[in-house]
Image 1 (tube, rainbow, N blue to C red):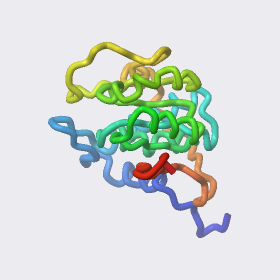
Image 2 (image 1 turned 180 degrees about the horizontal axis):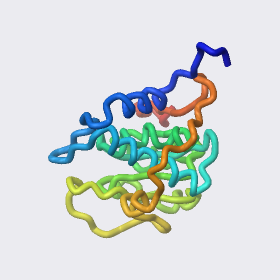
Image 3 (image 1 turned 135 degrees about the horizontal axis):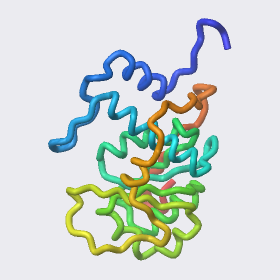
Image 4 (image 1 turned 60 degrees about the horizontal axis):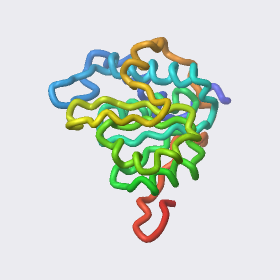
Amino acid sequence: MAVNQAPLSPLSQLQRTVRVFPGRTATVYGEQRRSYREFFERVCRQANGLRALGVRREERVAILAPNLPVLLESHFGIPFAGGVIVAINTRLNGREVAYILKHSGSTILLIDRGLLGVIRPVADELRGLRKVFVMEDPAAGPDDGWRPAGSADYEAWLAGQSPAEPPFPVQDEQQTIAIDYTSGTTGSPK
């Protein structure tokens, strides 16, 4: 790489923002406010946790969640782990979600507790995933207690991960860090 050239990436933008504005507010969710330093620590914990699970370069990690802070964290944490984020539309039904998980080759799923009912009818099709993390959003409403086999609580898992900044995984600005699907209004998602 030339001396005056650096790969452009949302990850490098976040690293710079944390250095320049560590105490500024990064996320607001209800009464919860997190600074860029706190936000970046959670991103690093997620990335290090995914690496510890064996996530490798360009491995697909899916997330099914409404517009919550953890969705934004995952848009950075998954690529920081070297993985590729597959953000799934929350308005899809279980069959469509299962199709995306299979088609994308996702190996891990992060899912908001409030959306467990979407995947419950297709739970057998989730057995190919290595891990399912359930995110406990207090605003999600009542919980019937059902969890996919082998699932784990996301926040408890995250708390046990290292907050150290992982090595920068983006070698080339053409490297895939996200896969997006259409909603499939006239057929399967594409």
